[in-house]
Image (cartoon, rainbow, N blue to C red; front, side, top):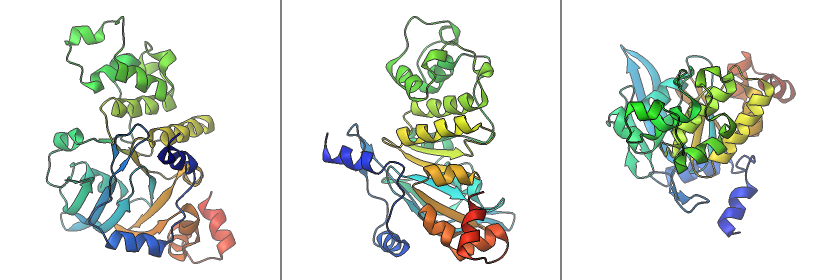
Length: 296
């Protein structure tokens, strides 16, 4: 096993231990997150957001947000409703106009149309499932992979499955349900299928909007394990309100409030931040009760 592999496996589920000041110093000393390499040897890029601003008819939804998501991170974005979390992701993916800079690796994303951003390896899910419910699991993945086949071929049962589709089925745990209609899947399985549809498109940055909303405890655990698996070869950003899920699977956390970054760091650092305590609980409190409230 290579030294790089040992480092990667050794930090799964373990949030970064760098202090806030150390992280800030690194951000100020560079223009973008440097690339790393995945366990398969492919380049692994990070996300760099600088002074991002989004306004709608005079209302500023994202107000000068800057953040760095290191390559291979599982970064959770949290904050009250209206904090700007989804709008930030919309800006990264080209769905809304924004100013500032958003770089993935060495590519500037702002100003590009949605389809060209997608081709650069940026994939996202939405709060509402977007699978084709009248098609099978494998047909959904086939379509997402962009296989050059006719519609008639796509909807027929096939004798073989493309390698990238077979790999995605194994990763998302649906290999045994390849021929099942997507509409008959359990809620959590539909979310995994959506993630699989990003994998077959070779997305290298996954932006997931509340992926465990409405899931059972077992489904949340399986989803967290899936995120840890896919982050070996990708960078993952998760918008989430489930504090228990965040505490268990986040490697780093950014807290947004009123369109700005309020706090950033490990789960423990963010929970201990008095500003976060006040936003979530409405008033400053002692450390013990704050931690309890944020973990609810």
